[in-house]
Length: 417
Image 1 (cartoon, one colour):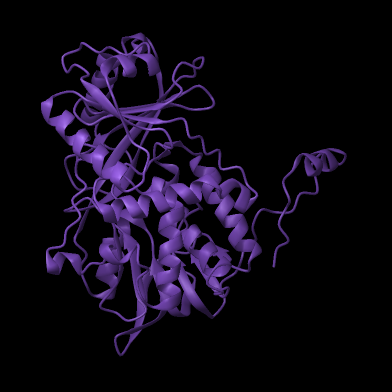
Image 2: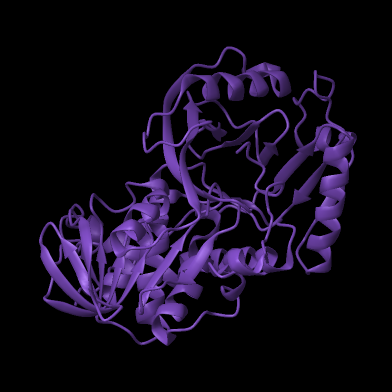
């Protein structure tokens, strides 16, 4: 087991005497064993968080995390880092606010700075329908004990002085969650990886799952490009590729996968100290600690596993940004990317057991996966360890599609699907 580094000003000073040459590795480069109590497929934030909470809270330390590439190389490293819990339905509000509460103490728990910044999040309204939607959602959120404020255009202008309130789609108001904000995506993956490794979890990179071992409708392990790895329980957390794994196991999931695009600008001095979202003139924007504007676009209008996406989505997003923030018209864009989002018909996740016993799936987060990382991993770990759904996860079972108990969060998702 790896002895974790203790990150503090004193350890930094001590290691400086040796030019920082004797830091221990953050996690081991583990080799797969023949069998584990539990195998987690997917080395992104959700998968690593699941492994950490399995070991930390559920006492299941004989765990392996299998990642076909490198840690955080999928959607965890391909998002806009936004954290919030301003969702409409009780089930969503409970799950996402559970995540926000974990975010608030995550750096201290992991002894790793995940750079969680509660800078506040504005969701703009541009027409009567938008105002009615944020009014309904704001009241529902407030009734669930989650901070929520309705702002006038003048109050929006106070928070974002350079915003254009009178564009083609005027700003009529906004919904504000002050506890919302951003976190550093790669730091989240690295922090959970380091903490899980210290608890004995094997983190195995460049290990692609190519099939499942199933005997008498019970999972017995996974077939990989590095051989068969036995497991009593298997949890799959691979975002847009979960439908591929489900097909390998012999069943279908009600999800579709599309590219969701984002881009960043060249750095500039601090001008934006909150996150601003708009679903109508689609763009959401924040400023990173390096000064870059982080801009989120919509999902492409076709199913694909391409991590490039189409140019029309970029054009649409930048038109919206320039309409709302004319001062950014001369900024150059530095880079663009796409993540593969897995979207259900009700825009809510799947945290579920499957037709194969002891095989569990956590997917369907669509555009909201990063913000849920701690909460998702926490409840999914309890599901795997106990073999039954955590109370916060139970409403998100695949059975809701058979019962018609959908959790429609299309408006709260705030992204043009």
